[in-house]
Image: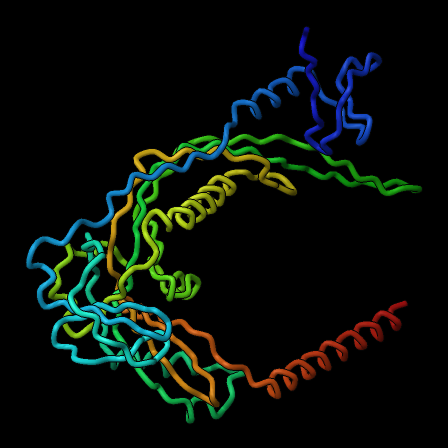
Length: 362
């Protein structure tokens, strides 16, 4: 039995038919007309598109050699479950995430040795100064926050990151439109032309970072980027002296989904920028295939500042290499509504003035 070929309208998705009068294919739903060769080519492109293929080769980290973990201790927090790695000189400390005391667990175990580390370049004093600058110019910040908030703790932490390298073979399909408008003495007209736009090519990614700590907010960590990997060095336990290192609790395999999303978004953005000259552009299909996809394990420097104000805890972070400072601030609701109504009143006056001028002109 012969297979029946059915074509779908690229514009509305309806089943299209051959119009014997026009000698073209025509959609009975949106009245769009198609040349047979163009539609056949479009259908073949969709069939060849394929699906996304994300396959990673894990080469992250390596096992610690005998004697390398001597002088490195592990601390666990019974409150949030966090596990911190420090040098042997740290007798007791507190959890940088929740502030509760942590308990010495003993010798480090069950963790890979990092491939790379970016050493701290900025000290605690720089973090405090950045905190002060972060508060300046914030009109909706409660006035008492700057004077009454207390920095309870400042910790320098090496945050675990998985770094993903990959080459991407990409095929992307877009639906684009061009709109033409005109009018006569009776009607206003609008014509929309639809286009199927194809893009294909290769793009490479190096050191796509995904933090390996579930306790670190992903948005907060991504806000600290970029880190300058050119200043990274092979890992040496001596870099831990005076600092802490967070023990990863999200593996490289578990982090691949986040890496896939970052690679996909960046690829789509890069290719979409090449689709120009249209009034609208919408992505309809992607086929991304990873090649030479590998992961490495690194520690990146971050200062964590825990503050307390008005019975609430606020967490701020600073990139220990570049000094980039991030963190959410409280909002004075009274000031917010004051500025809101002031802006609303100004807009209302301007609107009334515009109406008055229009009335005079008429």
